[in-house]
Length: 81
Image (cartoon, rainbow, N blue to C red):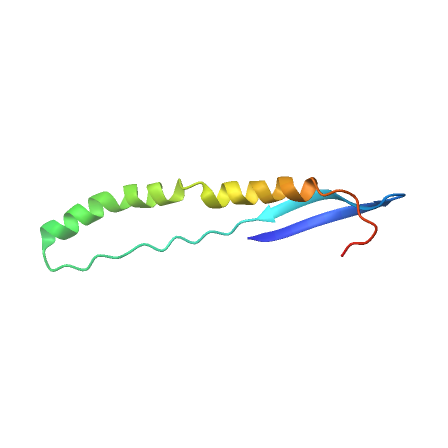
């Protein structure tokens, strides 16, 4: 995850005006190596569903969205530190 945010200045100091969280996911799944054709056939038939299941996991996406909301809720500060 990478976080980007922009701020504006006012009499109260600096305030975050925009936030963006970039999420770059890489899925690494096991590869089955078997000399048995039946085992390979079963694995190959189930592999697309396993990949679909992994991509449907929401934890990382929800965490990125939560970070965006938290950045936008910061109160104005006198410095950007």
